[in-house]
Image (tube, rainbow, N blue to C red; front, side):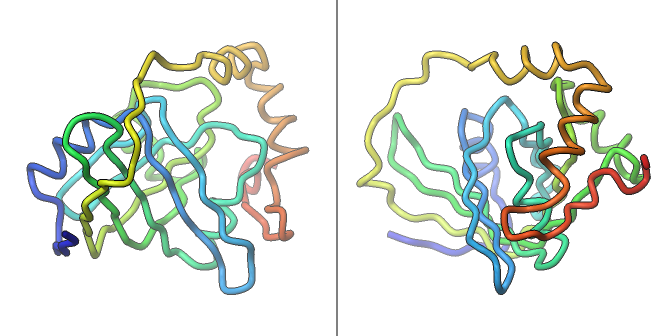
Length: 183
């Protein structure tokens, strides 16, 4: 059943590369727990103990706010077809904003996505697998282009205005620092 590993194996990395969807979980000591579904080919394995994912504009910015106060992050993948498997990555995350020195190096590892607002750089300290036998089968039929289309339509200033209005604090009032260096 469940197994623990100190790092990602080649088999784990291959499994991750096949997934179209993953989930990210974060919380501070006093905030609501946030679990977000992610896709859009936005995650990269950088080493057996490091992953990064390119975060695009959303209705909120909970993950960023949480990570800046409590850098714990869990990333969950589950097989919706083929052999059942759940794969969890536990680690310490760091938010990399567009104004941070690390941005350019990390951003080049991704296909550019409209509305990209930050990258989460995660040092993985525990990899856990479990059976996944209760996860139902789902068929992948394609990507939704709605968010990319919306972000392209907004343009740089429109995204900045949206971040100003909607992405500066979490639902619990924790700051995200998304605009600090650009003010």
